[in-house]
View 1 (tube, rainbow, N blue to C red):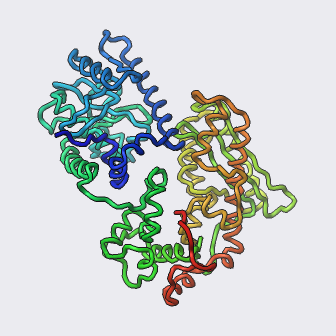
View 2 (cartoon, rainbow, N blue to C red):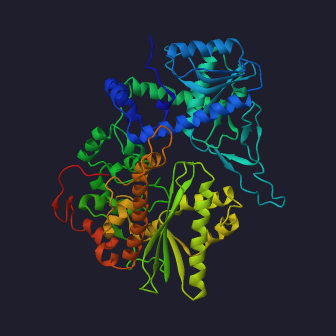
View 3 (cartoon, helix red, strand yellow):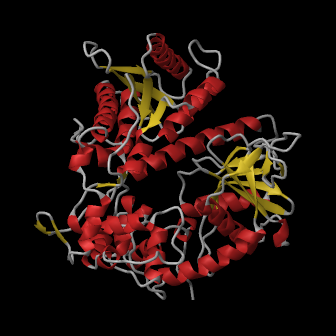
Length: 570
């Protein structure tokens, strides 16, 4: 009897989504991709195409048949036949290798590469995210990089795994499960590199495409078998699942079904993170009402980095439609005489094409508040990115130095510095020598100084944020509204493609103005938010002690305006 057939993507993520996909196959097959999903697919396809051409170029001087390209436009049966024929012929590298669907075991899959190794083939997948990062220097006297690192890598032009002390692996579960399934299929076909599981390996080429990160498959295969059996049982409806809100829900097409169901039962996962909801369920706290009225110590397995009181406050906020809760009696945020709000726009991993700034001189009210953008409209990646970054840094440094010279205090602000810091440091390294581009050390010193302020962190210190801490969630509470109703980081990716005519997109110069206005609104939102924190937030936002009084008054889910009605967005 044939089993349900699972693709590697079925092995990770939401179990309930897997159950719904297989219990409603017609709906799953016919629904279109969301714009965000299509954008990710397009970016991944572009990356794979670049890696494919790199592989072809690296072997262009070798005999015909060394690299076999299985054409993606052909039907599945043709791709399988081409792959198996290349394996029989002993091809060294097989691109877009498609394995026959295994109806007996219930598996299907393909590998961007099969590389000849040992007595068969090693699966290598190509992904559009980073799979390794530089190892930090060892703090022992010799100062060597990553001493003791067990990361294995191979050059991209051959299969020769070796310990690599200069890198640390950045493992992703989806990648590992995909490699495990491909390895299992190769073993069943008699095409694996060895009969001994301890000798089996797989590889991942990531975003940088400068090496193959190598995985030992033996420890992964044992975990894989357990997961595969459970997922098969779920897909065959032998194991029941129920919805629970997790991060994946934000882009899941089944949310229109699961969301109302969770609302109806007032499920606690609507107000806490996925792992936290598991802990609460294990402790018998399954509804928002139970959590909102809870008194006592946190459940024993509650994660130490998440204040339990925040979970209780968020539950009360859900019941009372309270958008923000004040932690402190008086909110605090860094202020200065000269203030510059900064927002960076990047296109995926290809670069940062815009640095937007808004300067406010509080010591000189006659000086206008001016928005300036430092931008390149040459499609990324481009050397011109270094020019725009150098101009941004030169301007920012000049304003900072001018303030110091006349005795004014200075601060630059961003919202969630992780992205800005990454591109500040990365740009300094990539564009060393370009006019205006500072050394990485100069950037690091600035980032570490008190003059670089993250308002996202300030929001977290001052408030509990029931609806999330994103700028577009919090700034409206302070009274800010974006001009473009569609403004979002995801939407800006589409606008950028059209603004520069990237790929198959038709160039639309009006999208450049749209991006500039979006960036300007982001820096103005940051300014409005931090000034509000330092101003009327104390009067506008209830203190946590006030909110907790809900438990003393027997709160029952009515808000300040009367009973809640209809589904609530999460």
